[in-house]
Length: 100
Image (cartoon, rainbow, N blue to C red):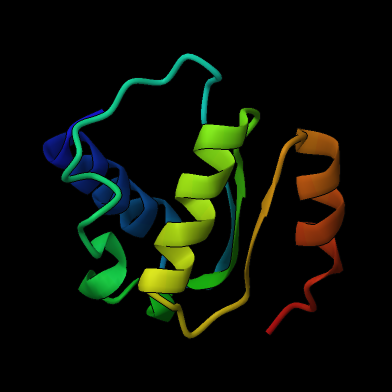
């Protein structure tokens, strides 16, 4: 994953939102390779809070889990965020976030 790819993902999130706030789950594959600039760039600065109710990241390996947690600590969001190792845990948490 590179910065351009992550930017495209953010643009698609906006397009899919239809102007409403949505719960978002990002699943990182265990063998994911990424450019160093991806976790050190604030991709959410483009105004994702306008159409994001909550965001959870599934990071199945210790390295990806630590990277995702560091990202959210370094770039805090205005909406709830969480990081889990399984999709089941992530989905349970995401569905527990009340609708706006």
